[in-house]
Image 1 (spheres, one colour):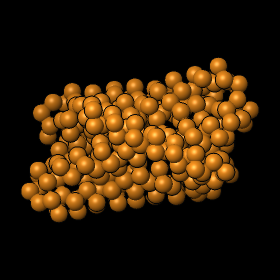
Image 2: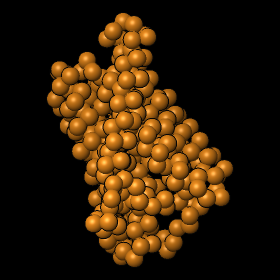
Image 3: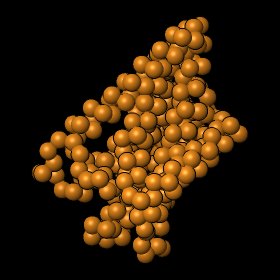
Image 4: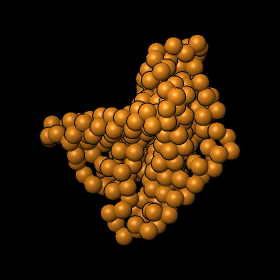
Length: 261
């Protein structure tokens, strides 16, 4: 076990603040009258770029380093992290197949959802996005590298701001009031501290599984990026713009990790 349980709470609170950034983004709903599909695609693509860089530089690379330090073999460390990535992606795939949910533009997915109101399908979808993000922050802190945890929390918080704005305006588009749209967008961010507590506690209880846990969090995030966000931002005519917005988010997060991590 890690020596200091306070790291668990640090990871939990950091993921809470990252989640609350969703509400910060949603505040713009009171200032902006409309948001175009083009702007929404660009913001979500930039958020995907931040998540993609966080997966590589703040989760996979540290996971490989932890694995090599624990096992003494680079090939074995790689296999452990790969196993974690596949487990994380597989877990998110299973949840997506099991839980009905609704995307911003692509409609419903999952099991039969005729008995669930559309708003709850939407909330489930955003929760599925935010839980692995919070878990990644919690794991980042619990590994003992507090600076890496702060970088992850900062990056995830940054990408939650445009996501919160997109969520709020999507709710507004289906006839929810501005106040209710803001409240729901803020509520969806609260999945992140739950994921943060889960990830941090998991590592605190069994630090030797750190390489697997980092890989698991990265795999879950990579599944969300590839299966959810990129298709959402590339099904209209602004594919090239979305691609460069993703690259912009990626390099910003890479810079943060290189200078602060």
